[in-house]
Image 1: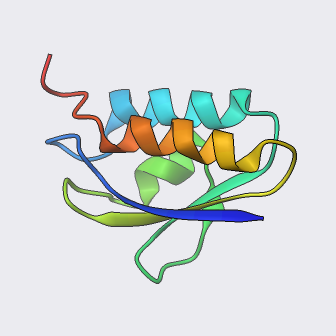
Image 2 (image 1 turned 90 degrees about the vertical axis):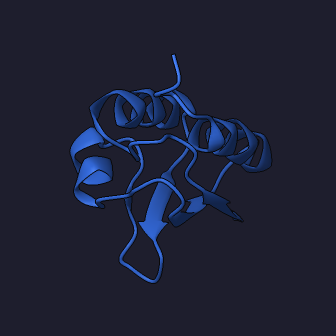
Length: 89
């Protein structure tokens, strides 16, 4: 199992667009991935509703956990998505 803590880069947090990009990437990873805000309960990272419900804002820290083949690479990709400001287009 691999774990990574990252700071959210999108200037408006994980609202619909960045949450959709993140959840789709987590789903496409093919292994179980969870995301948790602070000390909160982890949710399925592939669930856009679960991700949005976390209420993650810019600068918040989230913890990603993945388990399975290539889990470190999956977390690298997902962490890059989360640290990128998708609102600066």
